[in-house]
Length: 148
Image (cartoon, rainbow, N blue to C red; front, side):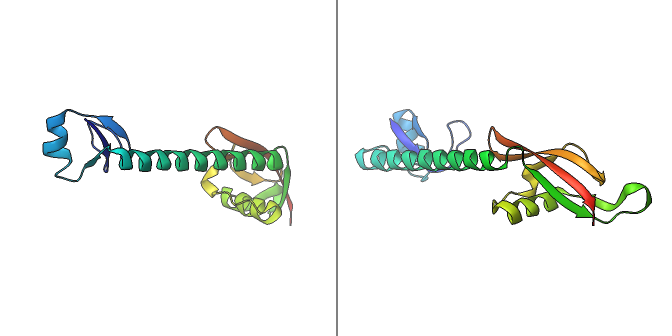
Protein backbone atom coordinates (compact mmCIF):
# COMPACT_ATOMS: atom_id res chain seq x y z
CA UNK A 1 0.00 0.00 0.00
CA UNK A 2 1.35 3.45 -0.91
CA UNK A 3 0.88 6.31 1.53
CA UNK A 4 1.98 9.92 1.76
CA UNK A 5 3.38 10.77 5.19
CA UNK A 6 1.80 13.68 7.03
CA UNK A 7 4.45 13.66 9.78
CA UNK A 8 8.03 12.50 10.18
CA UNK A 9 8.09 8.83 11.19
CA UNK A 10 11.42 7.54 12.42
CA UNK A 11 11.45 4.18 10.68
CA UNK A 12 9.67 5.28 7.47
CA UNK A 13 10.65 8.75 6.33
CA UNK A 14 10.03 12.47 6.40
CA UNK A 15 6.82 14.46 6.08
CA UNK A 16 5.56 14.66 2.50
CA UNK A 17 7.35 11.53 1.26
CA UNK A 18 5.62 8.78 -0.70
CA UNK A 19 6.38 5.40 0.88
CA UNK A 20 5.31 1.78 0.45
CA UNK A 21 4.02 0.11 3.63
CA UNK A 22 2.24 -3.13 4.39
CA UNK A 23 -1.55 -3.10 4.13
CA UNK A 24 -2.13 -3.77 7.84
CA UNK A 25 0.37 -1.17 9.07
CA UNK A 26 -1.19 1.44 6.83
CA UNK A 27 -4.86 0.69 7.55
CA UNK A 28 -4.56 -0.09 11.26
CA UNK A 29 -1.89 2.35 12.44
CA UNK A 30 -0.89 5.14 10.04
CA UNK A 31 -4.30 6.15 8.68
CA UNK A 32 -6.28 6.12 11.99
CA UNK A 33 -3.59 8.19 13.77
CA UNK A 34 -3.44 10.69 10.88
CA UNK A 35 0.26 10.00 10.37
CA UNK A 36 -0.29 9.34 6.66
CA UNK A 37 -2.93 9.52 3.95
CA UNK A 38 -3.65 6.96 1.29
CA UNK A 39 -2.00 7.68 -2.05
CA UNK A 40 -5.11 7.84 -4.22
CA UNK A 41 -5.34 9.82 -7.48
CA UNK A 42 -6.13 13.15 -5.82
CA UNK A 43 -3.42 12.75 -3.18
CA UNK A 44 -0.88 11.75 -5.83
CA UNK A 45 -1.77 14.84 -7.88
CA UNK A 46 -1.26 17.05 -4.81
CA UNK A 47 2.02 15.27 -4.08
CA UNK A 48 3.31 15.84 -7.62
CA UNK A 49 2.28 19.51 -7.51
CA UNK A 50 4.05 19.95 -4.17
CA UNK A 51 7.19 18.28 -5.56
CA UNK A 52 7.14 20.51 -8.65
CA UNK A 53 6.67 23.59 -6.50
CA UNK A 54 9.56 22.58 -4.23
CA UNK A 55 11.84 21.90 -7.22
CA UNK A 56 10.91 25.25 -8.77
CA UNK A 57 11.73 27.11 -5.54
CA UNK A 58 15.08 25.34 -5.31
CA UNK A 59 15.89 26.15 -8.95
CA UNK A 60 15.04 29.84 -8.52
CA UNK A 61 17.04 30.07 -5.28
CA UNK A 62 20.07 28.52 -7.04
CA UNK A 63 19.73 30.87 -10.01
CA UNK A 64 19.51 33.87 -7.68
CA UNK A 65 22.56 32.67 -5.74
CA UNK A 66 24.52 32.26 -9.00
CA UNK A 67 23.68 35.80 -10.11
CA UNK A 68 24.64 37.16 -6.68
CA UNK A 69 27.91 35.24 -6.88
CA UNK A 70 28.74 36.83 -10.24
CA UNK A 71 28.01 40.24 -8.74
CA UNK A 72 30.09 39.75 -5.58
CA UNK A 73 32.97 37.53 -6.78
CA UNK A 74 36.34 39.28 -6.42
CA UNK A 75 34.90 42.57 -5.18
CA UNK A 76 36.74 44.60 -2.53
CA UNK A 77 34.79 46.19 0.29
CA UNK A 78 36.40 49.21 1.93
CA UNK A 79 35.66 49.50 5.63
CA UNK A 80 36.89 52.06 8.11
CA UNK A 81 37.60 51.67 11.80
CA UNK A 82 39.23 53.58 14.61
CA UNK A 83 42.55 52.32 15.89
CA UNK A 84 45.09 52.99 18.57
CA UNK A 85 48.85 53.19 18.27
CA UNK A 86 50.48 50.50 16.15
CA UNK A 87 47.44 50.01 13.91
CA UNK A 88 45.49 47.85 16.37
CA UNK A 89 41.76 48.36 15.99
CA UNK A 90 39.49 49.20 18.88
CA UNK A 91 37.45 46.01 18.72
CA UNK A 92 37.34 44.24 15.38
CA UNK A 93 35.56 44.12 12.04
CA UNK A 94 32.87 41.46 12.39
CA UNK A 95 30.92 39.31 9.95
CA UNK A 96 27.85 41.38 10.82
CA UNK A 97 29.55 44.57 9.65
CA UNK A 98 30.66 42.89 6.43
CA UNK A 99 27.08 41.66 5.80
CA UNK A 100 25.76 45.20 6.38
CA UNK A 101 28.33 46.61 3.93
CA UNK A 102 27.26 44.07 1.25
CA UNK A 103 23.63 45.08 1.85
CA UNK A 104 24.51 48.78 1.61
CA UNK A 105 26.60 48.55 -1.58
CA UNK A 106 24.83 45.82 -3.58
CA UNK A 107 21.42 45.50 -1.88
CA UNK A 108 22.02 41.76 -1.33
CA UNK A 109 20.80 40.47 2.02
CA UNK A 110 23.35 38.09 3.52
CA UNK A 111 23.03 36.49 6.93
CA UNK A 112 26.00 37.30 9.15
CA UNK A 113 26.47 33.57 9.79
CA UNK A 114 27.04 33.07 6.05
CA UNK A 115 30.05 35.41 6.00
CA UNK A 116 33.17 33.38 6.80
CA UNK A 117 36.27 35.37 7.72
CA UNK A 118 39.66 33.63 7.51
CA UNK A 119 40.66 35.17 10.82
CA UNK A 120 39.60 37.97 13.12
CA UNK A 121 40.13 41.42 11.61
CA UNK A 122 41.89 43.41 14.31
CA UNK A 123 44.40 45.42 12.26
CA UNK A 124 44.47 47.56 9.13
CA UNK A 125 45.04 45.71 5.88
CA UNK A 126 43.35 43.56 3.29
CA UNK A 127 41.62 40.33 4.26
CA UNK A 128 39.76 37.73 2.25
CA UNK A 129 36.39 36.29 3.19
CA UNK A 130 33.87 33.86 1.79
CA UNK A 131 30.16 34.58 1.46
CA UNK A 132 28.04 31.42 1.36
CA UNK A 133 25.02 32.18 -0.81
CA UNK A 134 23.52 28.69 -1.23
CA UNK A 135 24.60 25.10 -0.71
CA UNK A 136 27.75 24.71 -2.77
CA UNK A 137 27.63 28.30 -4.07
CA UNK A 138 29.90 30.84 -2.43
CA UNK A 139 31.69 34.02 -3.46
CA UNK A 140 35.18 35.10 -2.41
CA UNK A 141 35.48 38.75 -1.49
CA UNK A 142 38.20 41.03 -0.15
CA UNK A 143 37.83 43.39 2.78
CA UNK A 144 40.15 46.39 2.97
CA UNK A 145 40.30 48.01 6.39
CA UNK A 146 41.54 51.57 6.64
CA UNK A 147 41.62 54.26 9.31
CA UNK A 148 38.45 56.26 9.91
